[in-house]
Image (cartoon, rainbow, N blue to C red):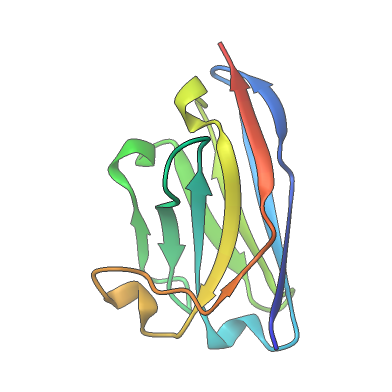
Length: 124
């Protein structure tokens, strides 16, 4: 069983930055494509970013391209989401997700495991 624990959320002003971390335990992070999703109040959970096992391939939703960067450290079983130039519309609960190694190459990233989420609030 894989456990994912997010951290790093908080309250930030528009234009500010946050870095989310996701700690993976139970199995090696290098077995999984890793992703970040978010869910705003009253909205469905949406894909934000994903990275392949080795880090060579990344995907982002259009609204965060150029502002968010996903990265990973397989030796430490950690995945990060660096969020810059934050906007109030980025306010959401952010979830870390692990999927099969092929997940990032599919049209839709299908997660096998989810974290409990961390709140990000961006004030205007």
